Amino acid sequence: MLRPANLDTKREGRDVAAFAIMRCKKLAKMGNVAASLKHAYRERETPNADASRTPDNDHWAAKSTDEAMGRLRELLPEKRRKDAVLAVEYVMTASPDWWKSASQEQQAAFFDQAHKWLANKYGADRIITASIHRDETSPHMTAFVVPLTQDGRLSAKEFIGNKAQMTRDQTTFAASVAELGLQRGIEGSKARHTRIQAFYEALERPPVGHATIEASAVQPKVLRKGFFTKDVETPEAVAERLTKAVRKGYDPALIAAAGAREMAQKAKQAQETARDLRDRLKPVLEALGPLNRDMQAKAAQIIKAVGDKLLTEQRETQRQKLAERQRNRPSRGHDRGGYSR
Image (cartoon, rainbow, N blue to C red; front, side, top):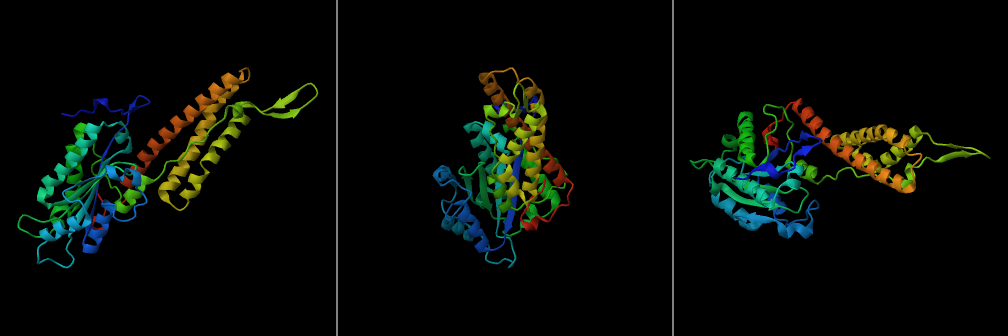
């Protein structure tokens, strides 16, 4: 039995939840299935993938789009509705922090359990292909299944046709990987449905960068020199100057955030981080006066570490706020290619 004991799930003395994540999307046209498969097999340009790491990807059952489409045609009944769902695409992964701490054995176990969950739900022969992508920011499995009933009918409705079924799926999937230290999201929440394309974009979205504070910047600047005296910056003035420097480092992210709700939230996060950094700088700066340059350099390193910690805390807070906001929004229909908690 694999246990999560060696996973680093603590931060600041508190538990940091790691979640099992699953999205699915209905595909009702052969062209849509083929397009999604080409993405999975990297047979078309994939900007969000690192080509140097693509050889690390694994493909189970079928090794190409043509082979997977052949398996699909073999399974599809000759008589079917024109609007019938031909395949369901799944993306299965976990919180980004989990992948950073999980061992190779645990990562392999995650994909094995995800595949077993699909086989138990649909039947192993209904899985036309499953790809493990390691060339993107967060490893994940992309799988395609045919919603074929035991009596030979195409019926996505019987597998994922209502909210109660989708809720059960989220629960049973999370349970299948619980021994790896992963848990389910809040059951019954009104989480907003996320398209798989948007989910891929979220996986690749770069985090807000760090601003570097040089040792010389910590030293109070001379504002005015006199014959016998000189005026220098107060600790508050130094803190304000450094805060502006930190904010400047976030400008590219703030500009990119315009017009995007998620990125706008990250902009707010960066501003909150800057304010927190300014407040925490004050007591440190008040003690910097008598320090030599070596001590000032060490102080600058400490300040940078504080900034890094604040960014981590703010990102975690942002994830929690976003989850809470999503729970308070009305859900959308699964037919649009989303998911349910």
